[in-house]
Image (cartoon, rainbow, N blue to C red):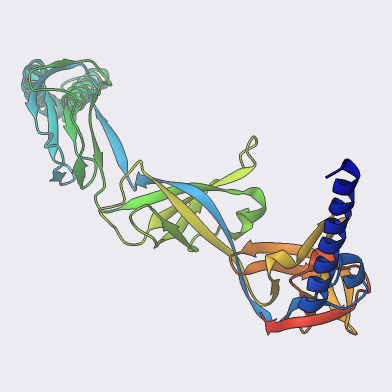
Amino acid sequence: MTQKSKQIALAVVLVAGAAILAFAIIRSGNKPPAQRSRGALQVDAVVVQPSVVEKDIFVPGLFLPYDQVELKSEIAGRVVTLNLPEGKQVKKGTLLVKIFDEDLQATLKKMQAQYKIQRQVFERQTELFKVNGISKNDYEKLELDLLALAADIDIVKTQIRKTEVLAPFDGVIGLRTISEGAFVPAAMLLGTISTPNSLKIDFSVPERYSIAMRAGKKVDFSTTTVPKATATVIATDQSVDAQTQNLRVRALVDKPNPNFVPGGYCQVSLNLDTRNDAIVIPSQAVVMQIDGRFVIVARGGKAHFSPVQTGVRSERGIEITQGVAAGDTIITSGILFLREGSPLDYASITSN
């Protein structure tokens, strides 16, 4: 076959292919894009109905004991009694740590004996003073010496009390850091005590939501093991953080749970507003353009582009705060092929 014959055969094949393709298009009822654009495009639509919208925000929260104290000795000395049962509960006022105080006890006994004698002398001098047996100056000096000695005794008793570390409240002892017989300097950490079965959550919210954070407000939170629990706001900071523009909030966990561990994190869900007449449409119905957001509203069987303002986004869709009213028919499919005034043919119409 010559080169010319080959070219003729190829041309015949191309013509035949084009004819077959045109026939297939006609048989299937489809039209080329240019022809389709001049007819009514089949679309899906939804008739907008008012619905309930809850405005939630999610922020991280930190579990903390309601009360937790670092146990420290006020004075340096050797530990002679150690009662820090790790992980055990103790009552308020329980002696937890005792520092050596025999020198102070001896000083106290000596001063108490001196006070007893000084008191007897003062009582005898009081009788003499009544009959003018001594001068008023001598009597007042004896009284001053007696009061000074009593004050010195109180000072020694205070020093002895500083050798004792007592439980400040009913709580559970954490890990101790010392052993009996150890010498501890002043202010050394001996262990911790925290309230059992009572946790609080600290979290922060943006400034614009601070007015909603009032004492008594209920908040939901979740962890990896507990999908939902509640807490009650008990207090907030008195001012917004200047750097983050957030307000720190503290809430008390309503029901204790062994899965809630101090120092652990949770996700706090805040319901800041509930509206029963909100307009919510499918998210895909919103068209993003350079000059803003639009939805396509069906009016008189034709497409009309309506600018909108959006609100809360959720799994159900996106809230429209302005631009759409209840009863409007919103186009949800084929929106990329529509222009202002395009005729519409509905494949389906539903209610949201």
